[in-house]
Image 1: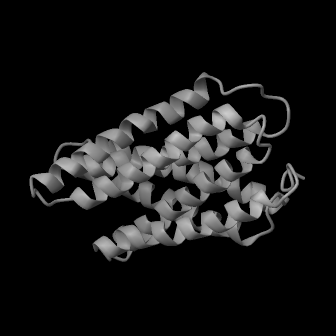
Image 2: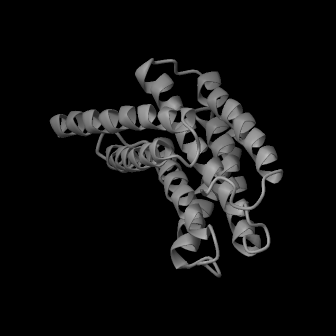
Amino acid sequence: METLVKILIYIHAFFGGLGLISGIAGIAVKKGSKLHKNSGKAFSYSMFISSLVSLVIARMPGHENLFLFLIGVYTIYLVLAGNRALTFKGDTKSSADTIDKTISGTMLGASVLMLLIGIYQLTMHKGGNAVLFAFFGGFGLFMTLKDFYTFRVFKEKKNAWLSSHIGRMVAALIASITAFMVAGLHLQTLVMWILPSVIGTIYISYWNRKIKGMPSLALAK
């Protein structure tokens, strides 16, 4: 069993590293370019596989970890939602479909669970990952509620898809960077868990302000 776990960890780390490299490349190059799109695809596939493997590891005997399991769910949500946001581009889609609502709805439930666990642990002074449960639960709740808002207004707000895409994909990259620092560099402190999200949120806010001043579909070309 331990041999299988080690193999899965290596697979998880390999695709996580590939995701980190391709994600940084996607951020660095011109948005909407061929290189950006190809980097985005490599990033999405790599992060999806890495996170999927982490779900298996986090439920294996002797390695059960609810927090890491939910973080894996969170990362998968970010990748899927970030790519689904592209389907709202243009006039081909009239409303959010079942896939969109299922992805965001599942994460909404997971976020509420994380938030409740965090609040419970903080209230009962149980320590552990209480702050992290509360932080990521609250962050996930904010993002999923924003998803459902975007589902209602994307026809009127033509660049809503772009804001959603950038926000989720950057957040997924943040998850990759956090994993590298915590698991790869063994910087397992509360600050290292939270700091990348704070910096990433500032970056996302910058792009959201920039998008508001853009003509519709400016980066789609």
